[in-house]
Image 1 (tube, rainbow, N blue to C red):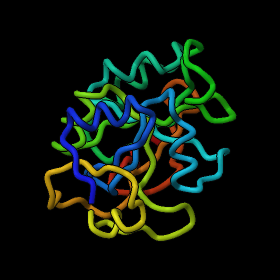
Image 2: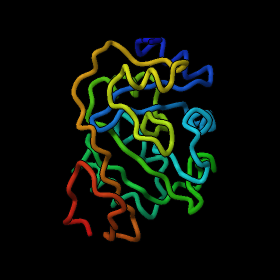
Image 3: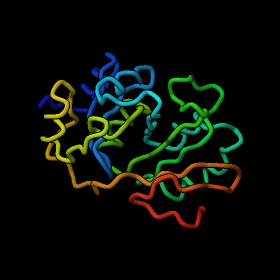
Image 4: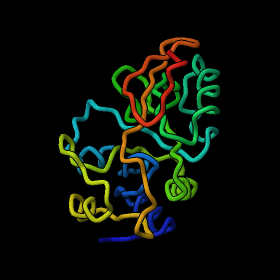
Length: 193
């Protein structure tokens, strides 16, 4: 297993390679946004499936949010982050196409994990996905993930702290004050829809 600390992880990410790290839900594989294609290659993921942009603070992610949705973003983010909620929201016009889905939305999240937040403070926002080969149930242990991705560096130290092992809840912004549940996960947000 190729363990790295946050500083060495940043060097790896700057070289265009991904890092595997723990979150409060499922372990993640992440890369710097300009290298988004690498996650699709490693995971064998359909390129039409968007990735999630994780950050360490709301102010680092708000620049990715379209002006029309910023107030709702702030309200929901303040209530649920850090935590197991992914917000799918219209992307800012300033953002590049490789960060958004086909409908020009972007998924954003701030995980409630000390190790993940430490990494994200060092690297800035990372494009992420769960650390598994697409279509296969992935391991939630660092040892199992290292077997699935033997060439990918893993954020240490290990063993990682406990995670829920359950995916994040995903909500989609339709218009001001109007959210739709996409996936029920770790967080219950019934009052939003």
